[in-house]
Length: 125
Image (cartoon, rainbow, N blue to C red; front, side, top):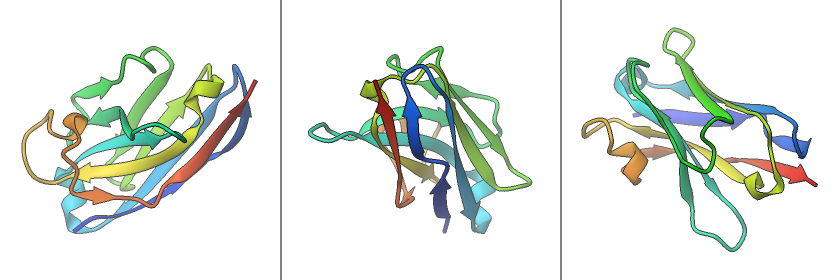
């Protein structure tokens, strides 16, 4: 199993930056593909970014490409999402996610085995 706890959310101004962190526990983390999803009011939850278990592959949604960067530290059991050039459309609850089964690509399609409880990001204009 994998337990996930997000942190780093808060209020930012348009054009600003935030860095989200996800602390993981459990033996399966080192072999889990990890990702971030977000759920904005009135919208469906959407994929934001993912990173493979080794860190050798990443994927980001078109809506955040060039602005958001995902990284991981398997020793510290942490996954981070650096968010730059924020805009009000980035306002959402951000969830850390883990996929411990299936191949690379599953998590970006929503194939998630474990979820964190989320952290709220609010971007003011």
